[in-house]
Image 1 (cartoon, helix red, strand yellow):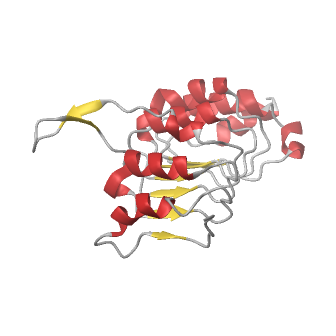
Image 2 (tube, rainbow, N blue to C red):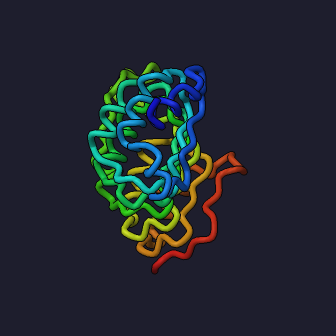
Length: 204
């Protein structure tokens, strides 16, 4: 058996959480990481939580479309923290397709406002007034700490996309967000004590 197949034999097809955080270049000498991941996702069809934090692998569009998209609606938690090759369209794709995602960690990713502003959700008819509005995301925890390219535009779009489901927002070291972001955030705080923005300073 090759090391790759030996590893696959050890993977329980019933696992619900996959963590490959801090996988380094040295680990790649044992397996061809990219092809291995394709096989893992094909074998394990019950995964709901993904942790790729600081994983030393290029996050290509092919990886997202072939590995993550087929069962996008299953995922409730995804961490891509410090994955420096994550691109705007990768994040946009996740937000559009992972309709049950509750927690997303993008801290220290090299993304810009386009990642959120290019998300256009389908509209549904409102029961109360009959008007068509987009169905809000279920995202309750969003970590964009250290994403220094993000501006107040992202905060406005996040509020529009998530609405009242958003309960925890990490903004520390987001150095291009201005005080106007508070106008967009203040409506979410009403009646909720557990929404907080951790350790960030705003430009005036």
